[in-house]
Amino acid sequence: MSKNNKQDNRLKINEGIRAPELRVLMDDGGSEVMSRDDALSLAYDQGLDLIEVTAKAKPPVAKITDYGKYVYDQKKKQKEIKSRQNTVEVKNIQIRVATGEADLKLKAERASEWLSEGHRVKAELYLRGRAKYMDKEFLHNRLSNVLSFINQEYKVVEDFKQSPKGIAILIEPVKKK
Image (tube, rainbow, N blue to C red; front, side, top):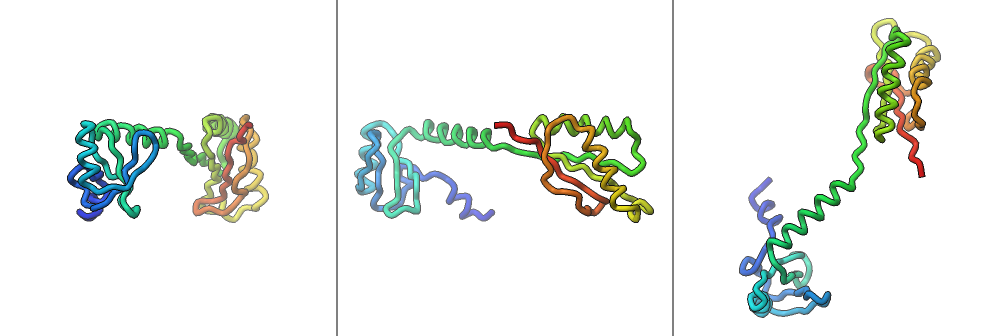
């Protein structure tokens, strides 16, 4: 990241604003176009700061407010936006052709838990050596066997497909309305 990019991301306040003319946002919701000096004197009269909100507009948009409060509100908005984002992880379960029934149930139980948390689950049948050349239908049935043990409601996102390690299927929870 260059030095110029860091400076572009910083807020310009008071004398740091270089535009000769600004559109100043007022407290009552209106806006007024005025010179930088008039806007600065208006801000100082109120005991507040002049903050450049949008530099790329013609003329640039500025707001008269307390700088600390403005930064606090911006951070609060960013935090709220971040908390609203729904991050969905893809969790993996790996089985082999010779994996026992009890282990399949254990892995299916873990997959059910992940589905209930809202995550996607990728079930992968890991193939090594001769297992790569087994009957495709047998391999699909083996992978379906794991899915039959899952007690959560799910839908298939990506059906059986070749993966670098074998055959995989991707499932996700059904969203209830």
